[in-house]
Length: 117
Image (cartoon, rainbow, N blue to C red; front, side):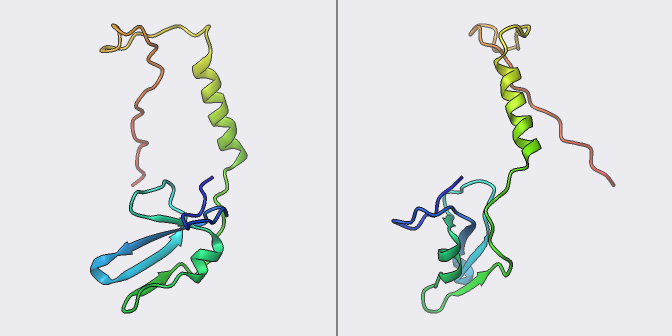
């Protein structure tokens, strides 16, 4: 869980603030999936009360800002994957380029899912 970027605020972040300097616009939208270096995470209060400098426009998401929810099955799948990766009775697979380090190559790049069209 990410916290609000405003100094002294300890509330949970529910929105992300980004700037479009070319258009003199501040954009407040739903919380981004990942923290970005040129954006700011905001709590509900700061997201609703944000003001911009004179001459700037604020574009604000009109829905209700809500904290991200992780489905129980997502968390269970993550826990199962971590548990499986840590098993010591799994066969060790040597991956090309990794053979000299003696480390297990348990991370894999998966192909993109087929697109429906």
